[in-house]
Image (cartoon, helix red, strand yellow):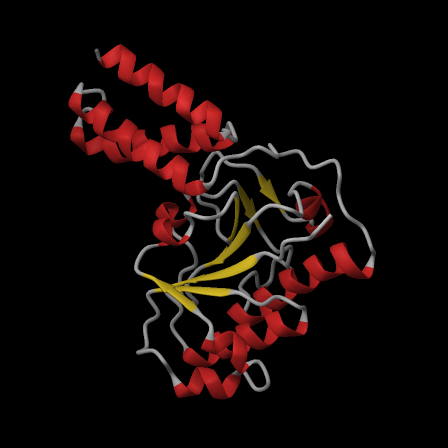
Length: 238
C-alpha cells in the first residue's frame, strides 16, 4: 500500500527564519510539501531560503493561500497542533503512535501549525478532525515552530518507516469526503439556517454554527452522506 506523506501547513508564520528551519526539519524526515497561509513577511524571502540550508527545494515549491479553509480543500484528514485549551468538543491526542494509528496512511492528511506568538485560533481549529498536543513539561509548554514540526515529522517517519509499522486499524472513516465537499456543504447549510432564522440571535450565531460544524466534523462524513444531507435539506426547504 502506497503511503501518502502528510503536508505541513503554517498559518500566518511570523519569522522567515522559522519557515526555512521548518523546511529543513521536514526534509530531515522525508516530508516534501509545505503550505503557507498569509505569512507576515513579504515572499519570496531570502532569510527563509538561507535558513533552509540544503532544503531549498521545499522553500521553492511552497504553495500559498489567502485562507486556511481554501488550503484544506483537497485533504481528507486534518490534524491541528496546539498547546492551548480552546474548549472545542473535538478528539484530542498527545501520543504520536496513537495519533498515526488513527489515520489511514493512504489518504491526504494536513498537519497545521499556528503563528509563533499565539498558536491556532478557534476559527483555525474548526475544520480539524483531531487536535494534537505535544506532551511537554509543565514548566514550559511552548515550543519553537520548527522544533514542533521536527518532533511531529520525526514521529511520523518513526511510525511508518523506521518501525516498518503501517496501521490497518484506523478509527476514522476510510471513505471520508474531501474537506472541499464538506466546506461547500457547510456554506450551503449556513445560508439555509440563516434564511429560516435558525441562527438567532445574531450575537450567538457564530458560536452556534461553530458547534454545528464541530458536531458534523466528528461524524466523519463520506461523500455519499454529504450528498444525502444536502438532498434532505433541499427537499425540506421545498
